[in-house]
Length: 363
Image 1 (cartoon, rainbow, N blue to C red):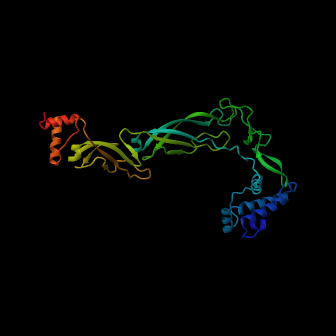
Image 2 (image 1 turned 90 degrees about the vertical axis):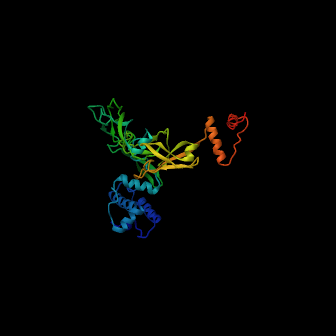
Image 3 (image 1 turned 180 degrees about the horizontal axis):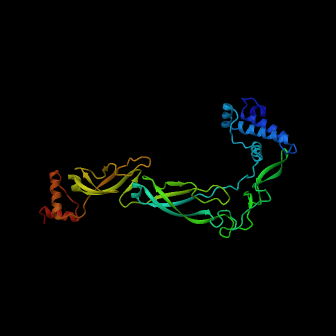
């Protein structure tokens, strides 16, 4: 079957020409216009199939490249009326809307910074809608079963006649009696009230990837609520909340910490032991370092989520100026100042002023 020939258009016809050709032929061969004639119905199916392929740019390219292949067109009345309604801008009245998916769920999992470093596993308990065990999800009381809906014959759909620009037309809608399921439950299950689903507690082992960031989500497909009307289950999203650390602040994969050192340590240098997420490590303080400068422990930060490379631990230094000095400390600082060529004159009225005056031999 040549789709271009079926619609009566050239192979270089644009989308507008193809749509106009289909609408012209659909008006002529629609089953309702022809009293349900088998010949007209077959012709209507052919032009619907041709339009479904040629109106879709991707399918049309495949068709032009290799002729007829599997385009997912089943040729049923539902398919051809869907195509007709779309081409003419008619509503499809929510066909098969009963197969709505289950609800997505979100849970929060609290982590420590150490778990971000190593990754690992955590058990999570949460509630979701799951198939009722009493009725095995059928919604019918044990010992009974749903019956076929007499209104739609189990198809879940009925044809509805409506007036259009073409006269009296038929569209497909969900069955109003069974809600589109095709079945009716005479004896509902007492456990689930005929819904086929109940709220139940679930346990999930969450795999925590090393380097995960605060606020990121892990997705578990199909672990959300089960649909009560035959649709796919929802998903579960686990939001990871990383607690603040008493020592470290995270910036990307780097860890920052503040460290106070004395004037003597800053001037002369020192070797200190500082904490890391994996224990303690020695840190070399170079002589003459200034307040506000930073030192790094390379590779002592957090790993990247996409590689094994780790960030750094950054130590921000703050030189601590003492507020309580002994007489000996005052004397030494005065000597240091003289060596630097400075004669200190502390403000009058301060406690240090009096002690400096006495240290210098004043009354």
